[in-house]
Amino acid sequence: MSSDRPPSHGPSLSVCMVARNEEDTIQRALDSVSGWSDEIIVVDCESSDATVAIAQKCGAAVHSRPNHLTPEVNKNISFDLAHGEWLLCLDPDEVIPVELREEIVRIVAGNPPENGFKIPRRNFYFGVPLRHGGNYPDHQLRLFRRGKGRFPGRSHHERVEIDGAIGELSVPFDHFPYPTFEIWLRKFEFYTSFEASRLAARGVPITPRTIRHYMIVRPLRRWLERLFLKRGIRDGVPGVLAATFDLMNNVVSFGRYWMMTRDRS
Image 1 (cartoon, rainbow, N blue to C red):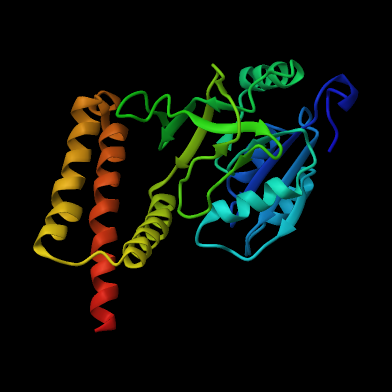
Image 2 (cartoon, helix red, strand yellow; image 1 turned 135 degrees about the horizontal axis):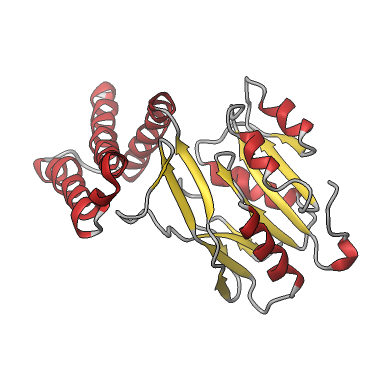
């Protein structure tokens, strides 16, 4: 991968990404890291669209892996495939702005004492940035020394665990998880199936108490907290949708788990 800063000018940086059927988003993500990173690693998980071709066109080294229910497993593999002294973990629906690029290059070149850095994330719902409801700054640990960061690999939406000190960057990166309702519905299917499987693995009993907890008390508490205590309602329609989608995910996940247990009996 070519770079605007030769490796001799400082520690090298690899961008690590896992993708599956991301032809609508991956080019924007890769374009935001091309030209200044030293290497881009894309682990493709059985894509059936143009994801691989786009990634290769952008100069990424593409490796194929079976699709895993827990994406963090393949993210760890992407770390193992990288050669850079520093790794930047990025998803296909995320973008590194120019200002953050400059901050990352400066931090890495300075050989800091920290082994990892949290970066604020700005989440967009249907094109609108969310500023409230617990959606910002939404710090994510994405920049770390190779060999010093790892996902536990036990569940979805895990945090990277760092061996050593952790710092924070100031400039946010952008996250576009739900540009359309069609994409939200597709992800809703995945997330609720995944959470139902986690409930099954834990053997959660289905009783009046667990029904109240998982389908009423917990979702409603989170919904009210996000909208009013954390002022998500100030983000208007997108803020209400974000909180409501969270409520729906919780309710439907338990409903799918109930159907799994019913079908087995």
